[in-house]
Image 1 (tube, rainbow, N blue to C red):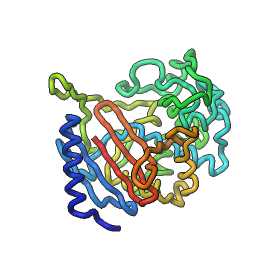
Image 2 (spheres, rainbow, N blue to C red):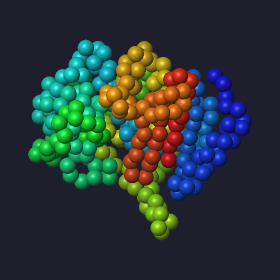
Image 3 (cartoon, one colour):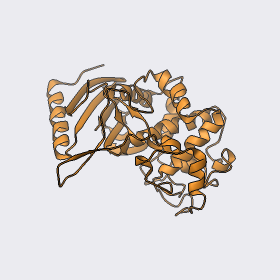
Length: 305
């Protein structure tokens, strides 16, 4: 493992300070990973503790955990990605859509569930989610185009829970976090943690955001994590792990489903580094997160605010 050159570290410190100022962010922490270890961390603003160990909400990076659970079950022969959702959750809305289409955001189902803004609302159980969406129609036919869907991943979370006979969160703990040693990735915040704020760009004021339990929508964006833990997760995404998921399946997950697309099976791809970076971004009220791995260079780039 090689550390960054001092000049590179100073450039990164200046970069995140500029991002914090220009974005008017209460705080931001960032890290660079090599060989599965943090080789640089930085933090500016009102960071509540050690930048590497302060929790932030990671939003839709949570979707990659849900994808890992689904792909684990597929690799173990418990399901096929070409099965319909109704095969495992008969009462689910949009049960005719395949698991593959739900993972790749090509199912055509609505982006958000019917009802109150789920990210700012205490969520109900899956039965309540089904009832709220029972009469909702899909805006697109399956496979027509890419349309990002939080609802799709809530449905996948329930599906994999039923296949395993456990809750989605218990599966995340037992099948991902414990094998990878991610002790600071949690369902709800565990101090030291950042408080999420909305920022008024006209009044220059901060309004605290609720840290809600999103209930049946949790598989789409509930989790909290730290730079230290995301560095461990990056090491896994870069090389695979025998107790979680092999590299060949992770490479499959990062292969875009549509020829001109930038999304695979729960993982996004963007241009950068040695060619393509694999990972995900995330937002929840008051929080933004970014997590991208460069397999060609064995590095990863993390940002939480």
